[in-house]
Every structure is written in structure tokens, then in C-alpha cells.
Amino acid sequence: MKISDAGLDLVKRFEGYHDRLPDGSCRAYLDKLAKPHVPTIGYGCTRGVKMGMVWTHEQAEAALRDEIATFEAAVAKLVTVDLNQNEFDSLVSFSYNVGSGALGSSTLLKKLNAGDRRGAAGEFKRWNKAGGAVWPGLVDRRAREATLFLTPAGLPGEPAMPQAVEEGPAKATPATVATVATTAGAAAGQIIPAPPAEITESVTQLSVWQSIISTGHTLAVSAWEHWPLVLGLVATVGALTWWNRRITS
Image (cartoon, rainbow, N blue to C red; front, side, top):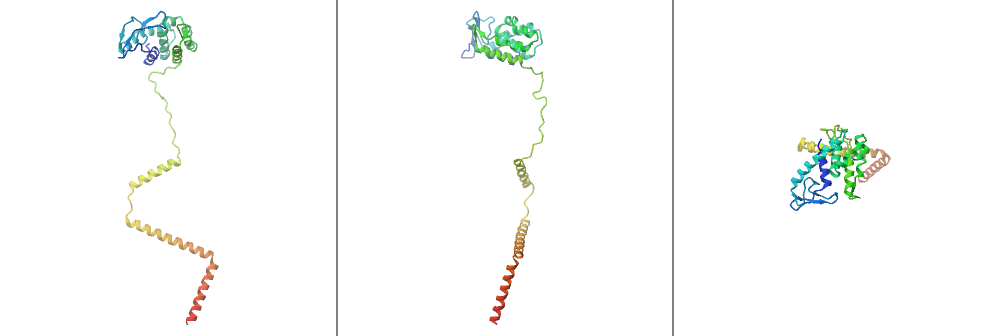
């Protein structure tokens, strides 16, 4: 089993890339947190490193992969239960930092091999000291490794959403209806041509006659409702007309 790219990125994040030079290369330095202090370069590599050495970034990447293979083998040998990728990655990161010997004698390994995975995950946080003092960077690293250890690994080739949820038909809202009506109206305007001028004029005349008829109907209804007044007016007009004709004759 090999560490995944995600697991390798976790190692690189916490190891850091030291001692970086302006051109992107790196040079050896003394790791003062280790006892005894050891020449270290790139992403925490120590194998065959001597002070004064300078590596390109590509050399540092290759050396990390080469050196971490030793810890992959150590984890595979020390652990007697089956591991998923996340569990394996977290243990390789852990042993690369503290050493495979420390992993081999740890309570973490004992609990894991006994089938107590939850108990094993709780042991990561105990390895948070450097130089006899709690180191914030190690606290963070152990927390990330424990979280990764407890994260279920997805099955190879498993789709992101094996069962997509189908949404039901959207409910009509006033805004939706208005939008549909506008769209339909616009589409109809593009499909149905404008009527000829003769038809338009006829329609206009018909509207005028309808208005006249409606007005007449309204007046008739009003006259019927007030017939005594109308009758009085008619009688008065008739009497005046008769009187006027009698005088003039």
C-alpha cells in the first residue's frame, strides 16, 4: 500500500519546505527540535543529508517520496489489521514525524492492532511535544492526522452522488404566470401577423356603435326609473307648444 497524493500533501504541509532560497531551491539546516540535532533538507528529509547541501525543488520532491517509502513499509509491517487509505495515510504521516520505532512501541499501535480504532485515534494527541514542551504545530498536526484516521475512505470509482434526487414539478407562482404570459404574448406577436387595415377600421366602427348602443340603453333605463319627471316634462313641452300655436294663429 502506498500513501495517496492527499496524504503526501498533508506531510508536506506540516513538514514545510526548508530552507528555501530565492531561486526556489533549498539548503540543509539543523533541525533543533530533534535530539540530537540532525541535518535536514526540503520536506524534512534526513537520509544522507549533510550541511552545505543544496537541492532543487524537484530533488526535494523526489527525495520525500523515496524516504517516505521506508515509513510506508514500516506501517504495513507493524499494523496487523486491515487499513483503509485514510488510516494508512495518517499513520505514515505520524511515523514520518516521530519515527517508525516510536510507532512500534506506542499505545496507539497496540489499540489499533487490538481492533480499538476509536481508542487508537485518541492516542494521536498525546504526541504533541518537542524539546519537552507542547508545540502548537504538533497539536495541529496530530489533530489533523486523527481526523483523517477516522474519516471513512470512499470506494474506488464511487460516484460523488450515486443517487441524485429528482425534483418535483415547480409550483406556479404569480411571477411565473406573468413571465409565461409575457413570453407567450411575445411569441404570438412573432407568429401571428397584424390584421389588414380594413379589418382594423371595421373593428373600430363596431366599437363606436357598441358605445352608442350602450349609452342609449343607459338613458332608457334612467328614463324608465324617473318616468314621472319625464312625463311631466313632456306634458309641459306639449302645453307650451299648443299655447304658442294658439297665440300665433
